[in-house]
Length: 183
Image (spheres, rainbow, N blue to C red):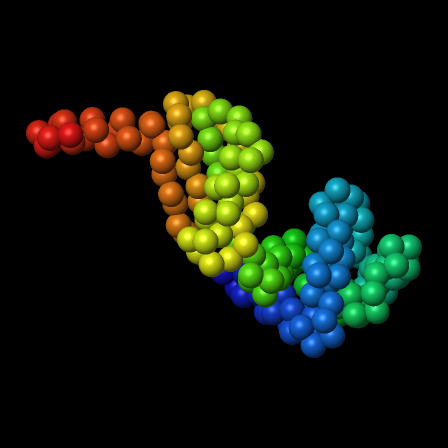
């Protein structure tokens, strides 16, 4: 829990800087790219994050990486601060929180939609527009297929779940029949 609070604090601080200088999207891309790099390159993450290595050597490795990738000055300072405070291991969590904050700032909601079969692109677009009207934000859908639904779709936006699957309708009917209710 403490780790999440730390990550949230750094993400909020970076978002405040981004709002001030109008570069929230640039920071989003740079932070996401660096977090992905650390996931892909385990040896690099170990060289930068492992406190068993000398602090000066870890700083030198980070500086070389920051020079090669050509991050903005703000992000170079941000990553250097994380290293000096022993928070470099939180980059992945900071990125997750920052992505949420940046989406919120832009009025974007991300939704997961599961359908029983492949949906045509125009159908997905119509669902996205309808969800946008429902919640008052632009909705970006991530679509997956699951044949176990039998038919219909299940959409999750944050804590809101909209279940229009035939599987759920059948389960509800079965429960109603067990209770002796009319269907």
